[in-house]
Image (cartoon, rainbow, N blue to C red; front, side):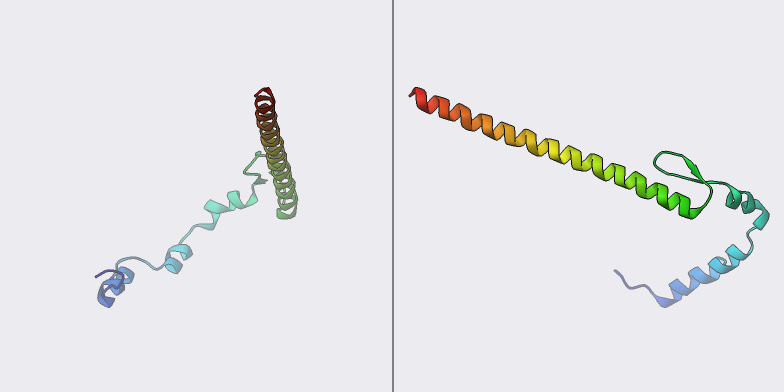
Length: 99
């Protein structure tokens, strides 16, 4: 039927399984309490932080480092391409002067 589904079929999905709220209400808090008490970890370097503000500050530093590296790469690439263009022009001038 394309994008449109029969309403009876959609309603049967809700009857077949517990709702999201019911499944979340059945979770055992003790099972997840240890995870909530663990230190937070940086996904990039793995260093651990005690709280969200510290992790946020650390991630901002990481992103700034990455941005400066990328900026440096782009600058080196631009200079390299400029040097290639200058060399090509110089070689063309030398050939033209020889002729």
